[in-house]
Every structure is written in structure tokens, then in C-alpha cells.
Image (cartoon, rainbow over all chains, first blue to last red; front, side, top):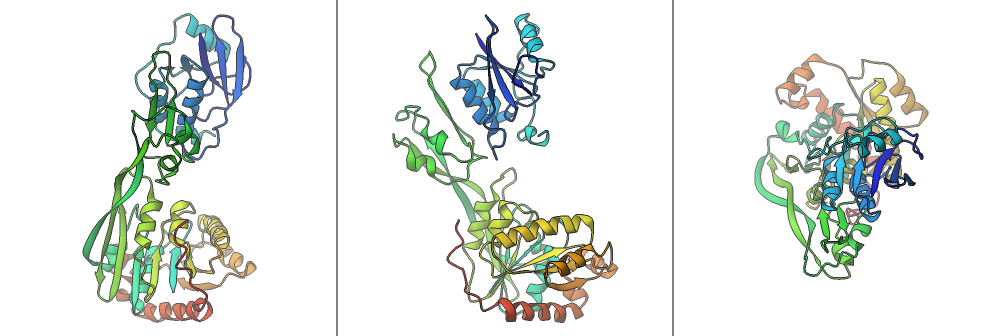
Length: 123
Length: 294
């Protein structure tokens, strides 16, 4: 199964990025064999709708679960419509996040965790 | 001629200058384009005679026709449309985010399936009236709406070229300011002699230069702070049109909604002189009334 973790760097030792729409990298990992693809976020500087664009990217990559620090309302709606599970409050390294997810330690919450434009201030 | 009043920094005295300039001259049309927080009516006390609903067109998807090709999402410059292609269960969806939509119409124009129609969404109102001999128009953006520029453009559709038009712009240097001051014949930048005032003045000067609008500076609370605004204007050959002192009587009358020129008649002459200077120097330029839209 493909899951995506928002990341501050391009490998499994990088830290989880607390933002979804404007994170630096998306690391898409196959949980079966830990093979991964790091995608530099093309929407990081979008004037508006970064979360919506990033959500569509997840859908096009057939991601089933997104792990991140926070998710805004527009991104949450896009991901939910695409049938993607959203887990927020994730910290630490990408590797730890994936291990925690596989161990069942991370649980999805209902609704977005932050308001629109949250990711802009932390740029 | 069209004179706009802008500032960069908020709270420097745009409305004070705009309102009192209007009250010092004849044959005026006054436009309050600070549609998120219009306040000129507090001083001009206009009698509103017409109230018009302002809309932007937003897309509506015909699910029968849509084949989730994604064109609408690709052409939307504001990411207001998301297309989720059909999954294994055959269900796709198109999400519209009305708060991001600028109403440009690209999605409906370019949809290959002709599956998009535009429906009107109210964003605010335009109110038109009179304050003595002044024609008064302002826009009020609905609470929770973020698209101020379309409403500002709708306010500016009522510009009356037979009058001297005074436009009170919002603070800042973003889209709403550009929509307000664009196609003015002259822009008055109101600032204060503080580091914040100077910082934001420099940004505002960048905007008016880019828009090729002639401009000058009014320094409000001119006897506080430091000399750096004066030095900056001198170095860059920017005319200082007027200096308004930090005066308790001005503040007291302002707090009661009494215009400066009523509390201190002598400012009427100063404002008239400023207008005459602007008119003589910049009043005979070609008018650009045909270029409001952008």
C-alpha cells in the first residue's frame, strides 16, 4: 500500500514537515517493501490553493494514506473526496512515522487540524 | 481627473486626506474603495439612494456531462477547482472552492464537455448616494468574503468623468490596492515619519511606479518620529504635497466623526492649494478611463 509522508527533506531520515499543502517534499512509500519516491512539492509557492493542488497530486499518485503535521480545510476536503485517509499530528523522522503507522500507533482524526493559509507563515 | 489616495501602511490618514480634500473642492465624486472596511461615510454622512448587489460568477458542474478530464482544474490560476478522477468504484468528483474563485470564467469557457455553467454568488453591495454636492459611492464586502477586487471594479464602473473623482484606497500594496488606484491620473501617498511609515511608503512607491501613475506624498503627524521620510522623498525627487501636524484637536474631532476642515477651516485652503498644484502639473494628461478592467 502506498502512503505519503510530508517531509522537510528527500529521504527516509528527513524530518516530517508540519505542513501539508506547502511542505518541501512528499515522500511516497510502499509500506510492503519501504521503496520510496521523493517528490519536490510543485505547489510550495502557489498564491492560493496549495493544499488543493497537493491533494490532487496525492490522488494521481494513488496514495491511500497521508501522514503530516497539519492539514487545512481545503486539502482535507480534497483528500477525503479522493478517498484518502488523513493522519495529522505526526512528528519525528519519516522512517519513524512509517514504523509508527505500521505498528498501528497513528490514528486518523475527523476534520482539518488547522485553518486555511496555515502553511504560509511557516515558510 | 481621477485622484486616488493610498498609503502602504494602514492608519496613516488616507481617509482623512481623501474626505477633507473632497470637502474642500467643488464638483466631486467620492469613491470609497476600501470595501473590506469602508469608513468615509462616517465623515461624509451620505444619504444612500441606491443599493446594488455585487456578484462574481462561480462555476457549477453538470455531473451528467462531466467526464473528469481535469481541464477546469488545470486552467484555474487560483486552484479553485479540484478534479478527482474516478477510482475503482467508478466515482469521481469535481470540487469547487468558491472562496478561491476570482470569477474569471476560464473553466466554463474551456470545458471540452460544456459541463460548466456560471452561477452568481453575492460578494457584497455597492451603495450610491449624495453628501451635499458630493456624489458618494462605496462598496461593502460581505463578512467572510475575500475577493475584494471584483467589488472594487464594480464600484469603479460608476466613475463620472465629468467630475473630479477622489478614490479612497485600502491599505497595503496587494491586489485590492492595485484595483483601486489603477487608471488614476495621480496618486497621493499618505505616510507618517516613522520606520514603519517609511518601509511601507517605499513599497507603495514601487507599486505606483510600476503602474506608471504620477504621485506625491502627504506626511501626516509630521512632527513626530524622524527625518527619514523627508530625506527619502528628497533623494528620490518625490514631491511632498502637504504636512499635517500631530495635533490633539485634529484627533479629537476625528474621534467624533467631524471632518478636519470643519474643525480647522484653515486646512481647506491648504488642501485646495495641493489640488491646484496636482491639477496644474498632472491634470492635462490623457485620461485612461477605458482601461479599468484588467
